Image 1 (cartoon, one colour):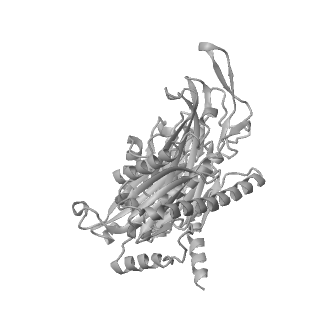
Image 2 (cartoon, each protein chain N blue to C red):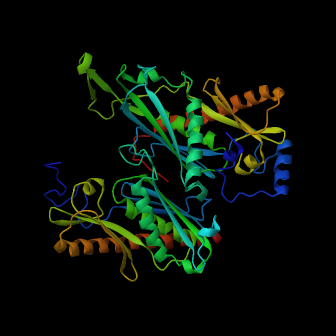
Image 3 (spheres, chains in turn red, orange):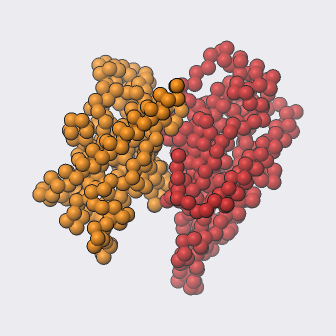
Length: 297
Length: 243
């Protein structure tokens, strides 16, 4: 990951003068950010689920300048040879030119594959998702979950927003129940007749990513586009609902002072707890609402 | 699909519409803060987002035109937009073809002579596809251009029409499009009544062409009514926000 990717999805018009940079960096060192947040505050976001009808699960995260839609499609496919009993997860991120005209050709593809790679690494840990439950016929058929994210608008810290939307979509995914009959070479798979007869995924250990950016000498959570341009390096932690760290990844240039590591890990865990709380609240709302038509605003 | 009824004995289509009925059209302007103009348009179950950036500088001097603006159009379909997962959202031949066709359509409507040496970027993203993708994209792009304040000669209103079981149908959904009957895509400029885009990709008997074209043109007028109402309504809201 290089610095180019850090500021890439910020508004294509983001230009910072030296004075603005000084303003942001000095402000952060005094604990005041340009939009009035504290160092550990996330920007307000809203989550919606079930926004796309052709999918097994979908979610949308909207914040002031960020909008990501994630759709999960469950299809039958072949398992990998080293894990014949498990299903597969495949990530794909599409950086739409709606976010910025610069993302039209190869730049958008590069950023998309970079983000998809970050998500894949974060989910590589076997405990994130119970992939064994997605196996159908060992060695021959399994469920493949295609997680497709579409970045419509992004302004700083896109990775975190993506991970939240992905987790929300996975929580929302319904996999049809299968009836496997027959033996040996002639096994048959039948999908249950009732479309509502489906299983959900176990997301109790599925993480979200929390990125902390180093601006000057201090770390901030959920950097805005301008802050990302002023920042040097960033570190992303994948934290699961119980506060465990599943994956760590660094980006940008520069290094993190060793004595700050303990503090930032703690900050990441605290922030993740708040975000999980919000997602849990959202989930309760969905469960209590009756099944309504898909609506997109 | 033998035995599948596209037209019930009572004259109702698969989704309960009558043959000359348009799908429900809903539009929202200004859905993105960063884009100069944006729109979200829903026609039945087809949902499209459009964004306009510009007029702004051309990134490469060699691309700039001395007397008018360059119009750049990009068409893209989300991987989850169709019931079968689409592996390549953009860059496949169909998308490039569609982008080129739409670019030419809008180049003739936008008053590009007012912005020499600059570029206008239009992007459309199909979020959910249920027939009439090209038309909904044209309608969404028109609304996004209006939201961006880019001067145009007229609205561009588009609609599809088909001919199944001896009846001309307006605004085909996905099932009707794949029914192997003819599908006509028409884009018009409502004030002058001129047809700016006409596309038929299947066999259509010359005798039925006039009928189907007539139905499509009426559909475009209906689309224009809805779009015009949305624009004026939006303006009213903006004015009242000032007071």
